[in-house]
Length: 522
Image 1 (cartoon, one colour):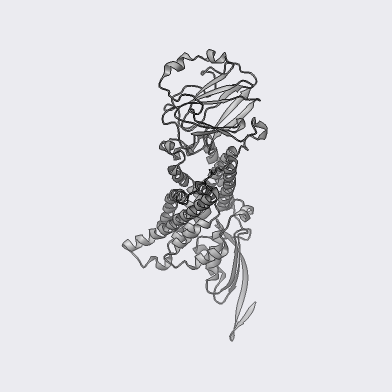
Image 2 (cartoon, one colour):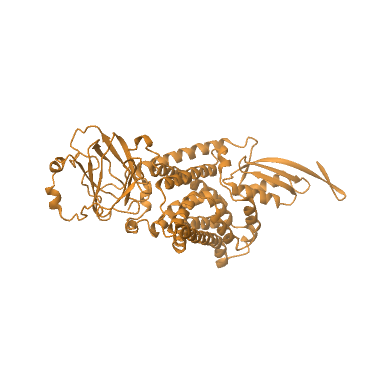
């Protein structure tokens, strides 16, 4: 098509290009912006969902080759007409294999237990644990806002050659620092507002978030983490429409400020508006604080936990450039999918979905049985003579099943009991065995929520039907099984024959085990 411009005619063409390397919707905004601001390009529309770019350009001013070079200069590729290649298919297969292997490893060994120190036991999910949760879930930030982070930290050719020495170092690390500072400020401000709302709505009452709601949030967050990670890897293009997006007017405003030295701070402030599962879970925690300052502190510490990974990633990208950024994005995407699968699994356990309603023996909500002091049972474990005098046979005479278990730091014991017979489950929690996760047990099938304390803890219930019933910690990360049978071949009160009832020393137990998949090791 020829268009007259003054006394001259210019030739206008419209071309469709297949774009590779788009990991999120921010890539769509970035490509569209750099194309529309290039001389000779009349119009450009880019779709992350389809992986296509429709470009209208003046052939007298810019060539198709130059347009491809602009796209590739910004870290993307132009693909053949099919939109994929044999290399992409091979890479996708390898990525899926790595994801399945890592998840199986996580499921079997509970590797995430290494990420939480044991001294958090006394905080009872206090501010220290909020920081650790931010540290753990910061991998998710790579999926949700990693593209934005990288776009702020990649060195710009226009000014890279004008500086040296200390100025060069400042230019390298300042964007990442400003971006993360903006995120922390935004999260803290939102926490303050949510705490204020909680105070106004709570009116002095105790706000409790149901475990079903918490589990549902984890499942939703897990699903979106898996979708975002897969989309970053480009494995299933048909999942791209499900990606959460920043409004276009915000992304355009951000890109227009690209030349501003304060732009990363502005972008970080906008980051608090991002739809994000783990972030929204923490926002509910801030709401439940019912205090604006407690809510702000909760969100501040959580956001502070997300800083090391994002700051380190941004700084490395500033030093090493775009090629390294792409590799880091791929690694981060794989980890996001693995953690998303783990979070979904934890959510099903916390919501009571994994065992199904047919296994429930108590339809009521879990009742908090309190600590062992609430049960009238002594927590003093220093007097071993009393325990020795109380034989299993004496207790069995009262037709009560007595189970002895020792709590370990990253796992719950599996026990085997008989249906229809009252159970007295004595759990010994040695010093140092409790942490921010395992201190509260949910026996949802039996309608029991029990807070453990150091020493002896007693849980009593009567199973009404046979089956295998899962119980979890209050975060859904650590799990154990209660197997109920109609008859037992051996006495359930014998500590040597009851599963999980051995009096073991937690210091000598192997750290890795198959019962825990959470963040609660030592």
